[in-house]
Image (tube, rainbow, N blue to C red):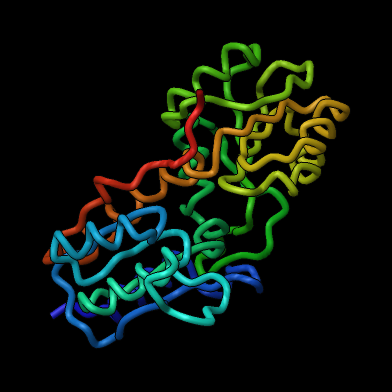
Length: 263
């Protein structure tokens, strides 16, 4: 019998808790380690719709990148979406595990998936935070190379590879060759990309002044959206869990989508 604790222990070999940011909330956030599992639903977010889908499918566990509970809750009521999600999981006996910034930083995690999805070669960690038990460097950002090309040629490739409805970008005036990537809100790490010698940075949640900073530094900066830059990791999570626990029924959420649209 596979339990929630078995799956949690395995996921922490892929993305150790020691790699998370100090402010983050990762691991088992709802349920119990001893609970048996036969079905696992994987998604980027543990939002109400995903929790409802898990209950309807009969899953005993959801595994997500983003945490179910991020800030301390003062109440769990049906007045809020998070309250309804927690109540739904508890009433259905569903546990929730997440790997957030530890999965961003881990070898093979969010940002390696993003680099692979964009077709980068010679992928390396930018400014490593340390090495894991296998001697592999880990850290937040990745860099790699593509064949030198105009930014106008690279943009549609990013849009297609990540299934984006649109991109925000600034042209730094250079061809694209050495590319840094940081899924989600990594625009604050812009200078790490510059110091690594990158001409292009693909990330998300870029602020107005950060676009100007990139423009003035001669860096092509592409905001491909938070969901789109992180969602590739869901396929990896589902694949890894299914391979480690072949007795389980594992699937990616069929309902979860990016709520942000372009008009």
